[in-house]
Length: 276
Image (tube, rainbow, N blue to C red; front, side, top):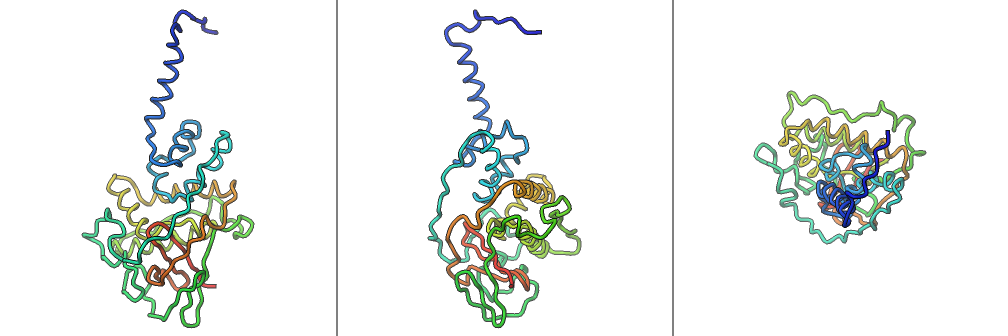
């Protein structure tokens, strides 16, 4: 049954005011601190598949753009211009993330010194390694910078439901050993879906993990869910091989992650190099 129109209740623009009040209230409930977050707030209520704002903020700007690209196109909205960050960060190894509680953590997890013994490595022998832009050369081995890959270049099944980010049990391992092993798996899984240029640094990974725990949430499930979001969007959307032209400036920004992987970061950007 259609409800009767009641024009007398819309005197003096009160109906319009009520509509504006609803819009303002809805927008206020989604507080944004960046152009991408503002776009997220515009889309969130029509696209329930988007992650929560809390999870959205944990991603790099590149991943945020990837998550918003399809909903924005469907809604006829434009992504904000890409911001290019200038590489002005020194290669100091101090205080990469102040919010990480290091009371139970080896301080070397955020060290950038190549020959410092850190849990993040897998008891790898010391080597004379040199950084050369898109390559890291260690004696007879050479590691190449990995960028985002098109879906056609991925292994068959990489974006299937069976490819999941599931971390192992932590029993019998120290926190730093467990985080290091989990970070290696995270990097390998990101490479498997072609997002080598869109990864978190180890420090941000640990910070995100600890923040989830402090909020009473399951960190393993949070990363697993986000990986599913990324797979879903990667299936439907094209990605650029890289979102800027920055490269690590010093080998001190880098450290070996496994026998076939190196990672480098400058606090704002993460790079992955793989053995070829």
